[in-house]
Length: 185
Image (cartoon, rainbow, N blue to C red; front, side, top):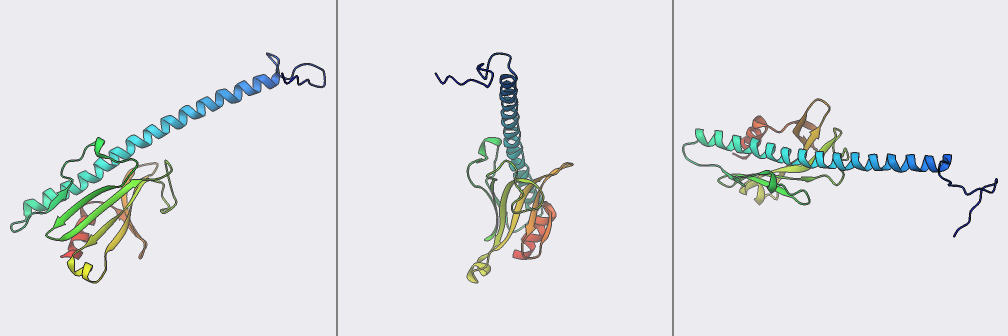
């Protein structure tokens, strides 16, 4: 055995000693911290799945509403169906709206950390990009791209776009999708 002795000659960690009590308290605190971390990771995982469903819903509603007004063409939205199990926590998630070759592509993935502020000043848990292109833009080697974040603020959680060229930011919603598609037509 190690045989450590204190200056008084007693073993340093006898039951009831202050040192042993401090160690026990530290280990108990560590266990509580681990439980809190696990609980937080599960909450963020659930919130990420909900956010993916919300994003799919925004896009799906936009396509359905616009298709009801169209007489000549039909917008295609993929994937048509999307559930919580479709979310790829360890990979890229992709939605696409196609208006006869005018493409809005929405790509997003989980942040490496539970919550990040690396690329956007508001804390976020999902990040990606919205790409817009048509054949004319592709012929010029141009693809419009804006960043996309699912932000978690104290009062609300929402999808936001961010244009790195203009520093313009706003909610990812029907108006935003309308503006993007207008630029492609």
